[in-house]
Length: 311
Image 1 (cartoon, rainbow, N blue to C red):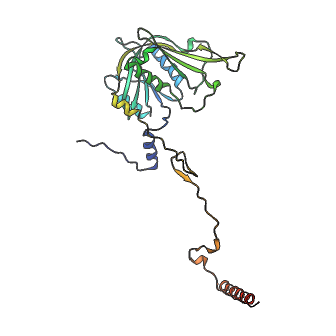
Image 2: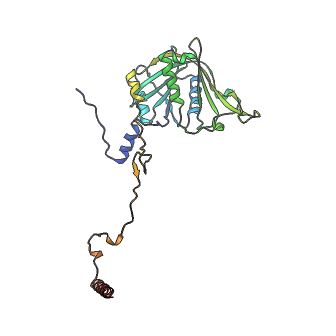
C-alpha cells in the first residue's frame, strides 16, 4: 500500500511557494506556454503568434521545435510546463494525417488534466486586417453563441477551456471605456467552431448611454474538433475545489483583516498609575537621598494631619 508523500517546507520561501499552490478563493491569472511541434505550417505558426499577441504578457514561447506527441506521451509536455511555470499550453503541429493542428490543454498538480485537438479549417491573421489594434493587458469580453455549447460534455469542457485560456485578473469594478475587446465563439450546425475577434467602439448616441459598434480586427479562425482527452468527473471536481471564505464576525469592536486574523478594541476605565506595581529591578531602585526625602515628606504630611485634627 503506497502512502502519499506530504511535502513539508524547510524555508520561509518554500512555505510561500507551497501555499501559493493550494486552492485559492480568487485564483490568479494563469500563464500559457506556446509550443511548436516538429513540423509546423505557415498558418499554424501565424495562428500561434496572433494568439500570443492576445495573451501577452501572461505567456511564454519556446523558440525551438519539439518532437512531442501529446496524445501518445504527455510526459515531455508536463516537464516543459512545470519548468516554465505554466498551467496552460497551446501546441501547434502539422502532419499529412492532421494538417494545421492546434491543441489546447491545461495542467493540474504538474500532470495533464485535459486537452482538445482542433483542426484549423479557415484562418485570417491580424496582418490581414487594417483596423485599429488592441493593446496589451486588455481583458477581453468572451461571448459564446449558440445552444450547442450545453448539449454535449465535450463542448462544455471546451467552453470552460476557452474561458480558462483567455481569463485575466478578476476585477471588481467595470469602467465602460475600458471594455475594448470582444472574443466571440459560435458553434454551427455542423459543429464548426467559429472564433472572431472584435474591437468595441463607443459612438455618440445623443443620450447618456453610447452606441456600441463592433469592428472585426482578427485573428479569425474556424475549428473542427478532432480528438479530446478529458479528465474524469472526480478529478475535474477536485481541480475546481475552492477553500471556504473566512466568515466575518458580527461582534462589537471586532474586525477581521485580509489575512483572516481577528482584531478587537477593548475599552477600559480610568487607571491610577501611581498605584500600579512595577517590576523590581536595579534600574528602578531609589537612591538613599530619594528614600530620605520620601521619609521627610511622610513626616510633614503626618504633622499637618495632626494639626488639622487638633483644630
